[in-house]
Amino acid sequence: MCGIQFGAAFAPQVYPQAGAAGVVFLRLLIAGVLLCLLWRPRRQALDSVKGAWGTVIGAGALRAAHHLAFYEAVKHIPLGAVATIEFLGPFAIALAGSRRVVDLLPACLAAGGVLLLSGGGVPLDLGGLALAAVAACCWAGYILVSSRMARRLSGGQGLALAVLWAALLSAPYGIAHAGSALLDPHVLWVAAVVAVASSVLPYSLNLEALRRIPPRVFGVLTSLEPAAGALFGLLILGQRLAWPQWLGIATVACASAAATFLGAGKRRTSQGSAKGGPTPAEDPSRTESRHSAVPVN
Image 1 (cartoon, helix red, strand yellow):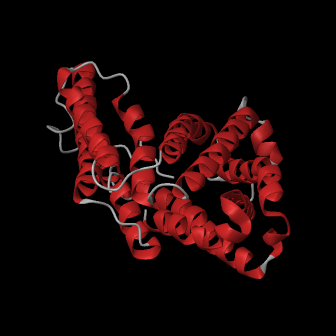
Image 2 (cartoon, rainbow, N blue to C red):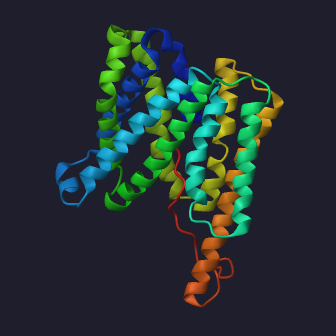
Image 3 (spheres, one colour):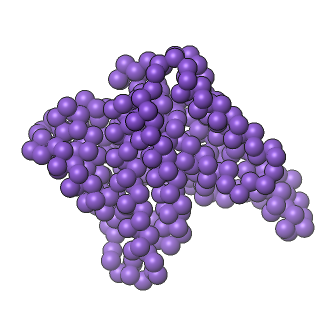
């Protein structure tokens, strides 16, 4: 999370030269090349899996749209606000399919947090809010597509190709806006830092984290991302928020944590009922699955 939000706060220093579109293109291109070198995807592996190429293409398109909307939004509203609104995408997926009244509590908390964020203290540009909402929708779609990709393809082959495809899709927009600035050494250096900090390291560390901690713990930790965005926005970009907006960010984080706990409890109950035996909480011999339903960007 620190790498992702640090990169988002570090990139704007070259916006006057390359713009958000140029930075996104370079970030995706560098990250895609590095991930391909790391995972060494093979065409034969994807050809052998039905629908693999379509899934990779869809994931790359959603990632390109998400990055462009997210980085453009940071130009207009504080990073903490962008990260909070964007986080509503995976939060909505976590709540999808809920059938219990108690599941409405996290939704109400999140709605209250967004109201505090948008209505208290520092004015937020409507265009920036709209771009952040687009990023949230793209991120939710990417989660659904990438979960299918993870089930069909082993390792990070699909991820590497999806990021490289996202770079190719963003190339015309990035080149049109940045032009020769893409070859500026300072722009290239900043883009490389952002690519490693916000893409290569987080994607790799997420995989390792999910092998070591239960999904419930992972979900709770990811709820801190909006707060991390606000903190790096303050430290690096000097973006200040009023105390009601900080409270709104904390409320959305609490709503995500609550949704994670409630979802874990519902899964344990349903699994125990289906088997006709004790739930996993009652059976100490049962361990939790290591696959998370709430990946991060």
